[in-house]
Image: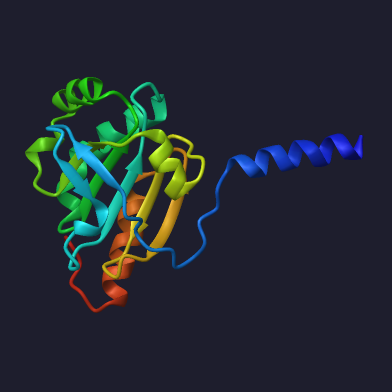
Length: 168
């Protein structure tokens, strides 16, 4: 029985990759919904990055992204990057429904799952990564996450760096 429990725990924990503190933004080349290449390292050094891994058929993802779309302006200068392995045509339709293209700091990108897995390990949808201006990982959220919790991490880093809050 103990052996079975140990095997079960190994299987569970080996499926989830834990990102070590101070990990930097990975160099991943993805395509935006116009299929133009984009690399996370291209984001301006004066911007934090909110990176959300999602799939279209994930209920938590749909809810989270619908809420996020309403609140993108609250993220101020933060680059909001939503990344998915879904087919490009599906992402185009999804983006038309949510209209992230109305915001200059938000976009949906397509990236093959094997490329994402190479850099992040096995991913659970939704997973959120927040990177500071120095491109170091500040926080990783797995599963449904409140928008306020994401904003709090971003604002706290701004305060720690002596920057002005995004909104008052």
